[in-house]
Image 1 (cartoon, one colour):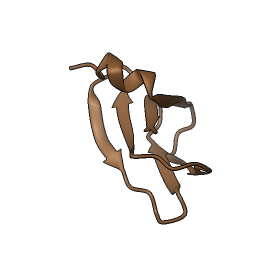
Image 2: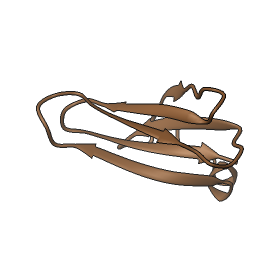
Image 3: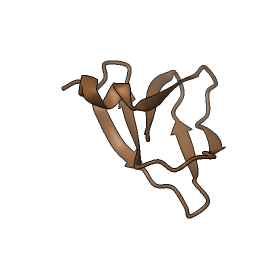
Image 4: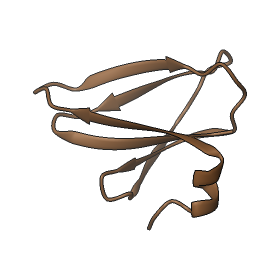
Length: 74
């Protein structure tokens, strides 16, 4: 299953790769309204969506030697 191309048109894409031997977490604060934060692995298989707080902050957790794509949808 791949992300719908229509979603890509309205999304900002972030790519993460963790080369460390431990789980790495990155926190972001989005400065404009958005409807959702979606994640996929290297093969673009969907992972659990991310939750954001009322300030638009969300955290991305990436396991060792893992690649993740995060789409923030306007």
